[in-house]
Length: 114
Length: 114
Image 1: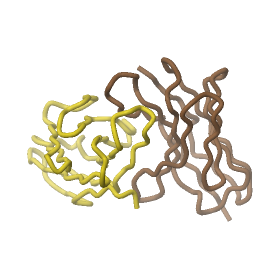
Image 2: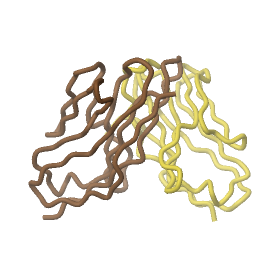
Image 3: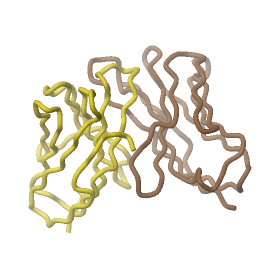
């Protein structure tokens, strides 16, 4: 089935620094790609998604572009804030069959210091 | 607030016991997914239901079972609990079972087995 690999953390940045979290995938066809965020003590929230190649998902200043040439979906933000401190998960559907379970990367913890 | 509710928020029990975790999906969502998040295994898909029927199974132990009721809420039953079952259990829901539909996660139930 499909799989995803993301960079290990933790990533520690100062406020207003540029963020990149790498995510690469292996998939049959062109499945939708997702970034989820988990704030301390909370569940997962969908951050952004892209449903086809070359799509750019964006939300709250975060962006990710679905690149089929490099099978990547890297997460970027131009200027991080302390409130962005969280764990970020790249995800995609495990397979193209009827079941639509997500397979997740290992998560990348981001810590932003004032 | 994702619209997905889970109860209880915390559960502390002893080895060998049985517990039931409950999930109510977002209004209108037909598909429910259960995931387990642990430090060593990360986020793993357990099982999916769609409109009352099992749709897909992941890494779910035989000691675990689930069902989705006519009102679409779901329960995850964990029996003969072991220390290693201690984890966060998330429920997610989506409008249908299509791969392009994002999943909305509940806040999770933290299970501690002593």
